Amino acid sequence: MSGFNAKAVIDARKARGLTQEQVADILCVSRPTYINIENGKKEPTLSQAEVLAGVFRLNLEDLLDTSDGVAGFADSADAFKKFKQVLLNALKYGADEDGKITKTKLAKLVYLADFIWFYENSKPLTGVKYRKMPQGPVPYEYFRALDELEEDGVILRESKGQAIMLSLTEKQAPTGKLADDEIEMVKKVSEAWKGKPTVDIVNFTHEQLPWQICLDDEVIPYGLIFQEEPEKIYGPVQI
Image (cartoon, rainbow, N blue to C red; front, side, top):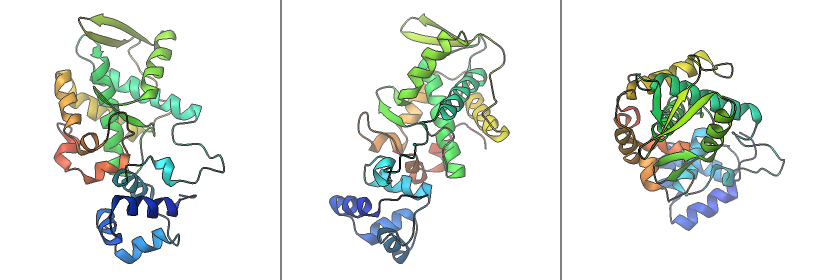
C-alpha cells in the first residue's frame, strides 16, 4: 500500500494520548514493528491501516498520501457497478417469499457481507464508505444506487406503511463484476437473515463495536471489525 502518511499516525496517536506500545498491542504487532511504521521504514497492511484509522477516529484517506491523484476504493465506475451487483444479489437472496425486502434491511445485508468479507480477507468487498446513520451503517452510494436501479427498471420501490419495500423486476441478478466466492458470501449472509424482522438485523448491527464507537455520520473504518468478537460478526451466518 503506497503513500502511507506516517506523520498523520504520529500526530493522531499523540493527540489521543496513546503510547507506541499501546497502539502496537492493538495492531497485534511488536513495539519495534510499530516504531518502524511511524518512522516510515515499514508500511502497514491495508487491514492495519483500517485499524489505525478506527483507533484514531480518522478516515482511511487521512492516513494516505493522495497527492498523486490515485482514486479511493469506490471512486471508479467499475467499483460502483460492483456495489450495485452486491446490492442486487443481496436483494435476490434475502427477500421474503413475496420477493420483497425493506430498504433498511437490504442496506444491512450489504453492510454485513462487506464487513464479513473484510474480516476474512483483509480487504473490502465493495470499498464503499459506510457511515453511522440513524438506521445503521449506510454508504451514500446506497441511495444513488437505488435511484439509478429504479430509473433503469431493475428494481421496484413501493411503500408499505412506514417501510419502503424493494423487489427485483427479473429473477436473476447480474454477477459480471463478482467472483464466485464473493457471490457465495452475499448469498450466505442474505439467506441467513431471510425471513427475520428488519428490527433484528438493525439491532444486530447497532450492537457491533464499529457502530457503537463511531460518531453520527462518521465513516466506519472496515478495520474496526477485527476488534469484534466472532459471534457478533457472523450472527446467524454459518461460514
